[in-house]
Image (cartoon, rainbow, N blue to C red; front, side, top):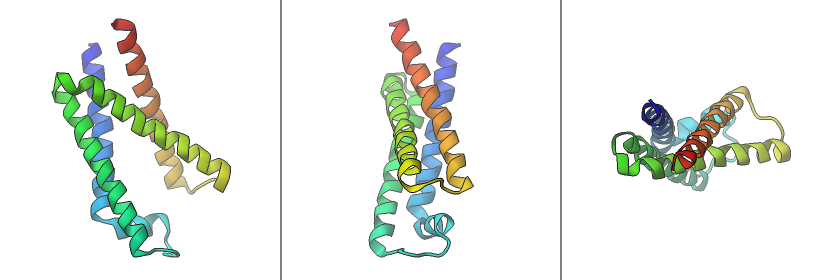
Length: 131
């Protein structure tokens, strides 16, 4: 049962990263327009950075998703997923403090990332106590 919970977490966490990373990496301008509709400050350099970050998220998501099916990769994938989601939570929180409250779509992503980070920490903590 515990293994099914961990596999389910890795599957969902990896799939979300993979899909979001693919969307950002492949349709960078659409993504930019969705988060900044007025297209102020959109430059080739910014699009290049976003595409690179989307590609990184895609690759990390693929690794985490693979951890669902490969037992040897499960613990490292759990750590990677938790670190990615916790990083989003920490730096989005910093953004709220420094820049103010973002739009609803970003706050929704923030809530999802918070849940996935907390669940990741919970799975890591549970695995530590079992060892």
